[in-house]
Image 1 (tube, rainbow, N blue to C red):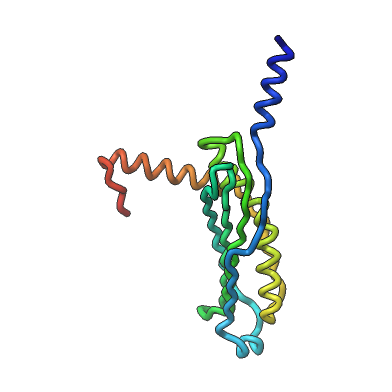
Image 2 (cartoon, rainbow, N blue to C red; image 1 turned 45 degrees about the horizontal axis):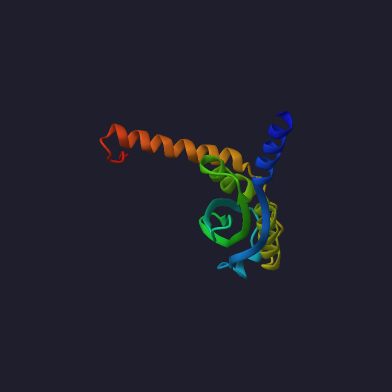
Length: 169
């Protein structure tokens, strides 16, 4: 009996799978509207970094495309010095997970895999644009995911309290 339970548990573990099938650039953009004049100025920009992830099923076998979009804007005063956007994507095989567990993998584990590739692409584009290297700080995708879930739940609760109408601010 114990052997059957152990075999069933092992079989269940084998069915859960998270694997990387392919990592690729989906879209890459670099703009530097202030060149060449910016190279004569003192380099003290302010940076803005925006992150976004999206995912969708690719097929019925458990393959999902996850796209991590990172946009970095550098400004001196109000003038845009450069804008770089990278859509780093991957195909991930995810089986044996459903519902919240699947959404968590798509929103945390996959972006954690993609982030180093996106960071390297952004740094290379900025350097090739003639600017000093930038190294994006690590991102806690688990915390961002939790924050997004909490915001979604809060909006749903507000809509329910307002008779199904979204709250206006």
